[in-house]
Amino acid sequence: VALLKLVGMKPVIVHGGGPQISDLMQRLGKVPEFVDGLRVTDAETVDIVRMALVGKVNREVVSAINQHGAYAVGLSGEDANLLLVRTRDPRLGFVGDIEAVNPAIVERLQNEDLIPVIATVGVDESGQAHNVNADTVAAAIAVALQAEKLVYLTDVLGVYESYPDEGSLISQIDVVGMERLFTEGKVGEGMIPKLRSCIEAVESGVG
Image 1 (cartoon, rainbow, N blue to C red):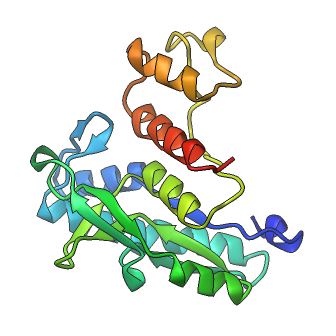
Image 2: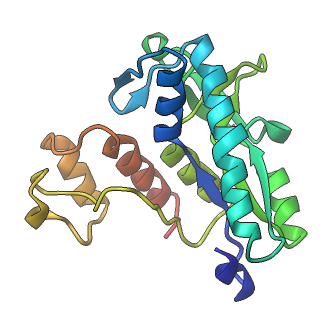
Image 3: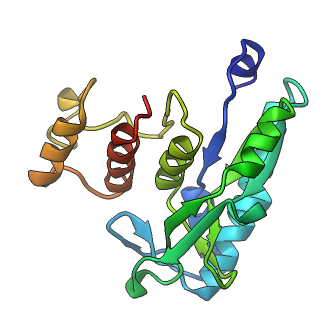
């Protein structure tokens, strides 16, 4: 990331922290629950999400980047109303769908030659914090900034034609191909929001 900055690019880092959230939930006596790859988030879990994402993961990512130069600044979707959301589904609790992205704070940091590192907590019109899927946020911010490229880092190899057969790993796919996988029921769990956000970004002109 620091190298991207040094060669003249303007990286923006958007991160989640699913494993860290789940770990903290379990340590506090809560059992993680998911629906269609999205975490069920009650009022107590929102606080846990903020602690894990903003208080831990964000600081760790900022610190790691700043080992290579004083570039990174941490923020969340709550800062300067960066991510305005609405509640997606009562079954999920405080899980947000993005209503609007206000990229001004990100652009100001970029103009100061800094790297924004964004934790994916958004707020609704009343100021209530919501957990927002990191892949969805990454795509929405890329679209708002008119980014040239959107790159995902994940702890799985990628998308499979026949999961979990590693021999069916797909190395290249377009929007039509991704839609076909959904139609054929070949996309599950965490890949659902990831591919949906890819489709949204590509259709909005992001590479």
